[in-house]
Image (cartoon, rainbow, N blue to C red; front, side, top):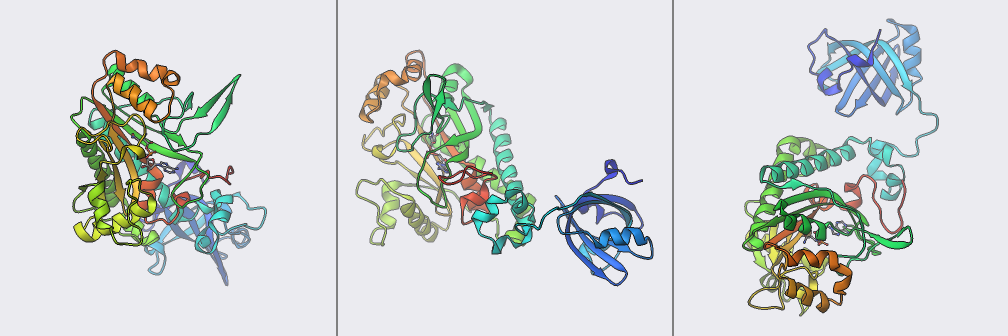
Length: 440
Ligand code: 4AD
């Protein structure tokens, strides 16, 4: 009798020696009846295998198989038989077939037809959409990126933390917050773990990281903004400058990209037609110098250097032409464009000890050295129009021994999107949220 306990994935089944008996289970990907033979392409997480059901062997099994529909769920026990024209050069000749689940309505979308289906409809039927091997691959790559970073930071002495996503105040100037009814008060969904990760450095953890959700009430509809995204944050104490943070971010990013390249470059090429190439070098360029590169173009930087995504894209192209790399840091952003906690530059207080990491023309990381001197921090808060008394829990930390520190936040979906050349960030989020979408 067929038992699911004996089940192996299709990628192992196609490698099994001819003559072996195996059990596979999955979804009916394709079905074809030719005379007295029924051919079922069975799909599981790891790939496809052709199952052959012969009428001569069992008329009853053949009848059952002929009535299968795309996306029915089946389990098959059979023998591996060489077959040059089949997937992996083998067929699975069925000896037992069990129908585990039947589709009970016409399919609203066909997983394989993702290219012909609008993104909105695909997202409405996300569980079906994700059955496309191409779409599943996006999330395997994302899993690899996140885990590579997690390992990297752990190896470099960072402690993983989980901070509250219910907060009393906004932290990232400019980005809007979602209010939440919190008993008799209004709370907000955290835009970033910013203040808490700083708190843990000051609490003596020295180096922390967190991978968690961040919420932004961004009303605009763009291909690179979500209202909920996964933020990989780090914060480190006893730094000499933002370069120490940049170095860590650079190494983590390269590690993540190289792990994806070594595990998935062949599949990514096959299913997404993208080459995962590691950048030759990661350069650092001051924002004012980067802006010089796009002077005289249709999108020159504004005179106050508060640049937008169009400028980042143009700078990305210019840097690629000039320096032959698509992964680089822009440093020294103006004070008007950065949050209150950012440390100002020593030589010019109009600028800051900050940076963004740009990959293929898209900002994937933002970071800085933080202001750790109490009186300067209060001053900066007031400059940004914030009321220090609202941040007393945060400010208190700077009165009792706060080492110089800095950190950065990386958007996991942005990294996934750029790595895989996706046109819309929603493709890189399992269940994207935007101003219109709250389901599924
Ligand atoms: O530039 P942001 O807002 O910086 C912070 O949150 C700081 N607390 C980080 C720090 O440690 N200084 O966001 C950081 C990153 C961006 O570079 C981007 O990758 C991602 O988070 N991000 C978004 N991703 C998707 N949708 C959005 N609406 C995003 N907003 C930011």
